[in-house]
Image (cartoon, rainbow, N blue to C red; front, side, top):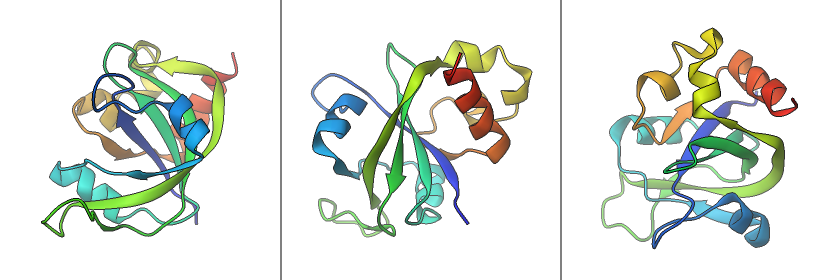
Length: 139
């Protein structure tokens, strides 16, 4: 069964990485996650799972979809094996980015982590919320 996720990334700056870059690269390693809850979510990821790529910072919007292509594994750049990574690949841009303000204004999202735990960088997306974001991106 496919699971759905949202993963946040700062799109610019010295440590930034944006969805356009992923499109060019085709694949990348999703790394740099240290929050315990975000790591717990990453441990549940598996190949074929779908992920909204969310630009943080000034943009604060879901911009595209990527797919998990590996099981979680220890980050080779870290000395601590509890810090894990997954491999991802570009799938597609959303027809229109869906902003955090739109999400906050929609009652369907009020109990979702994106609204409740704003600093969380990786979170599950219930199928109903996934479908609603896809619907909003088409308008």
